[in-house]
Image 1 (cartoon, helix red, strand yellow):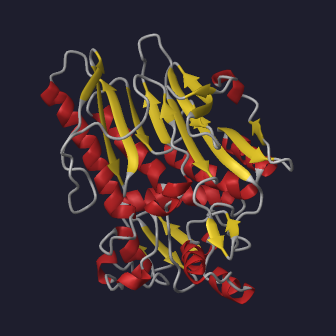
Image 2 (cartoon, rainbow, N blue to C red):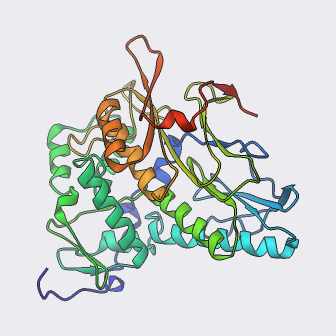
Length: 392
């Protein structure tokens, strides 16, 4: 960007409520909520009197001891996504466990304040309101998500693209008006999308766009990033084994004392069943996204809520659900974004993307007979149970 001056984001706070876009919350109905088959099935938070504060967070700490030396806390965050933290604290007091859990919830709330464009004071809202044709300073967290997004955009040939926020708004308005967007309207929106129009600067962190009026929605990656950062909080607190879950994003680490971590994948057609389980004796990260909940219905026709960044229209292939997994060093943010990209690409190209990224993937699709079928990366069966089961 040459010698252009980087503008502080605080200079671009002007924003109207009518222009707010859905972000973190937009993908909530799409999430196939995983059941972590550990001690308790995932359900509603078990805290009492846990009223919400102004930011949507629960203001109290729910805390149970499912087993000796293990502590668990649950709540609904980011507009009622089920969230859960579980950790091993040998000989720890309830006060010590509560302090750990509170630190995790505080981190979730902090990340939410960065990436929630429903909040006009969030960083992404202020970034969307800024004139980004000149470099605009961003936080380290925003910079990290931009960099992961760029990696996914490159690897998927544009199938993952957080600059498509205007497309989401276009189709959400189409549901309200019951009018399918015209090709002209779609092309007009596509002219100001595309991560190839984004320049990311490292020192200091900043972004600039070659097209004016670009808008970002990190709903396809922010939940995974929030899990990454909250997992880091657990590790930073000295926790040797634990798990963080936010909807379809799960990250577990450490040993469960000779028992594996087992993560259940929601059956896309029967909410009382688990399709398969993925397990690991040590570190495991899993991300699941589904296309089977709350489709966009316009004039009696159902459309997927995930859009192709190239066509500007809902994806056409019948993908019922995508699960990505990693047992090494990849982040939950990468897995989260990859699951979205695989949904856009379809089964064959999606599996190829997973192999390119060196992650595992399971794709559930619907064949011409309306039957579910699965395809997965070659190494995933080593960590996957082969039989469906009822939720426990």
